[in-house]
Every structure is written in structure tokens, then in C-alpha cells.
Image (tube, rainbow over all chains, first blue to last red; front, side, top):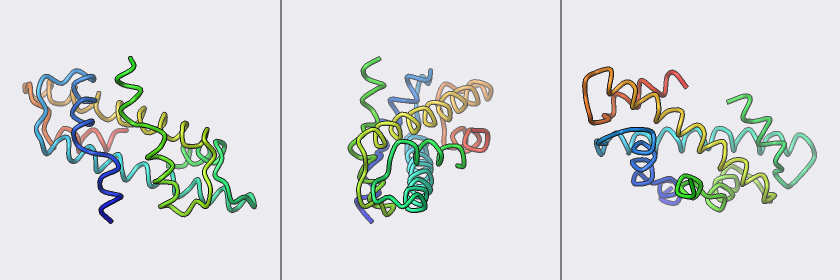
Length: 72
Length: 72
């Protein structure tokens, strides 16, 4: 899934690490952070979709995301 | 910090929710997912920076991110 791969890129992760106080960021560090963030996002998203369906809705709402966050 | 705010935007979050099976996504759901993902990313990043400094390095490496992931 090339789409999935490109949604959260390594470059902004290096920026975030610098904002968090990093002087330098190794390229593999930014890449692995992007991977971790993608996995986390998909975990929350999958749970949120489940919760919206369980509530009989076709639309994912804010409350589904908030409930999903507590579980991941 | 406008920079920080724009790093992870709501639009790709809606795409991820659709990839996770959502038929429709309410705008506030995408926004709150972006917020949650940003917070998570900064938590991991802050810990990773701490670990790199603890190891006497100025460069954040992959292993710092991996250790930080286990803690967040």
C-alpha cells in the first residue's frame, strides 16, 4: 500500500524530534518514528471505525476517536 | 507554535480512517485524531531525546526511538 506508506513521512518526524530538543537526528530514527506513528494511527482508526459501526453509524465521529484513544 | 500544529494535518487522518474502513468521517473526528497523533508523536520524541542525552549522544538514533516507544 504505497498510499499508506506516504501519509506520515520521515521528514516531519525529524522536525518533531528537533522541536522535542534533538540536536541531530539519524535518518533511521526519523524513519522508525514515522513507522511507529503510522501503526499507532491505524490502531486508533481501526478501533474508532469498529465503535462507529457498533453504534449503528456509517460516519466516524469525534466520540469514536476519543473512545478508541483510551483503548490503544 | 503554528509549525507544530501543521505537521500532522486532519486531511490525511480522514484518509487513514477510510483505509481503516470508515464510510464517512466527520470533520471533528479527523481533527481530534490529528491532535491525538501529534501528542503521541511528541511524547515518543521527548523520551527519545532524553534517552539519547542519557547515552551521551547529540544524535537521536533508531534505538532511542525504539526504547521510547515501549514507554509511551
